[in-house]
Amino acid sequence: MTKSTVEEHETRGPTPKVFHDLTNAPTPLPDVAQEEWWLDAGSLLSRLLQVGQYTPKQQEEHLCFFRQHFLHHFGPYPPTWNSVLTRSGLPLEYSLNFQQNRDPVVRISFEPVSHFAGTSADPFNKGPSEEMVDRVAKLKLKNFDRTLFDHFATETFITDNEVERISDLDKYPVKTHTALAFDLNGDDICVKGYVHVRWKSMSSGTPIRDLIQTSFAKIKAKMNCAAAVDLVDAYMAESFSYNQYNFLAWDLTPLHQSRLKLYGAHNEVSLRKIEEVWTLGGLLTDQIATEGLELIYRLWELLGLDSTTRQYGNGYDDYMNQGVDDRLSPLIWNYEMRAGSTRPSPKIYFPVHGENDLKVATAISHFLASLGPKFDGVDYVECLASLYPHLDISRTSRLQAWISYSYTEKGVYMSVYYHSTSSYPLPGCVH
Image 1 (cartoon, helix red, strand yellow):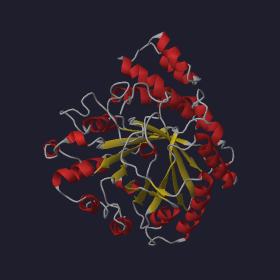
Image 2 (cartoon, helix red, strand yellow):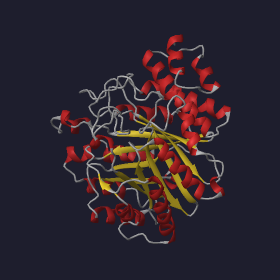
Image 3 (cartoon, rainbow, N blue to C red):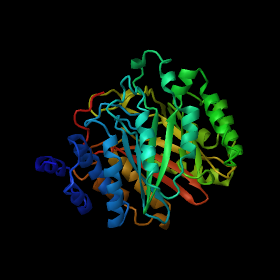
């Protein structure tokens, strides 16, 4: 790694000593692309780990994991594959999760990419995720189990033969098929899988709802969550929420510890729609749902989002010359169906991409403070500023993309999702 390259990235702000030591390790990275991804994305990860109060040993372990198992799955730098994971098209999205009485947890959502992504050899970039799961499986991570990954691969992943049934692939700007996520829980790493089911649906002629529910039907009894699955299905069908934007997620853990997740999206961003989604159209009205909804009202007011129907058309936002339709994001939600539970747990994703970052950060700080001493010590504005020390967050509007919110008997569970490189925007990234 050249001295000039390192110095160029260091102008974007200080990074922890652990990161510098790894950057200057005697064993160099094998190519320039990996060096650039390490400096650009790895430096931000190191600052996130500091914000999360990870010990120096934990920081080193997680940065080494990132260096050894992520970098060669990024593909070219700057990226040539546009991922659905982020509004910028980056195949990487970091988030910080805030819960009461514990330090923030760093999470990494990632669509592994190869140089074949988008070519006739792998038009949906499906292969790298499967390869990464194979690689991670060999690490013997605590509680890692690929049973659900293999199940959904069989039921919902498009096969090579099925790819040929989809004509005129170039007319689809978003082709992400699968992705992974990694929760850095202290010393441990928990893995999750994701799949967009539209491609299997298109190639097989199977309606989205049928494809999803058939895949769930084969495991919901084993996971003892059939009642929750059926309740979610009833609302999603009644509200016409099964569509091309649905995707599924699951934990790569033993079945009795795992969760199924079904995601939905809608262009209406309003309290009315959020209330409907939160209560499953009035099907979920217990005390937990009621308490959680009251806090949603508070967060909505603090964020000051406009109630509107957003004409989001699946576009990417490169931070410079895009129109408003490309800038604004839709409402996203998911329903978590946990093994052994009859009650689905809703999660709302407030779209804040395109909103002033300082305004959003101030709203988050006030919301956390309003929850009382359980969130004492969280100065979120300071957290955000420390992640991007080279930027004036009062003048940016793309550093925070989503705020996810859920509520259980344990209280508030909230995450913030970030633009995930130190570069802003990523150099040479064209959509």
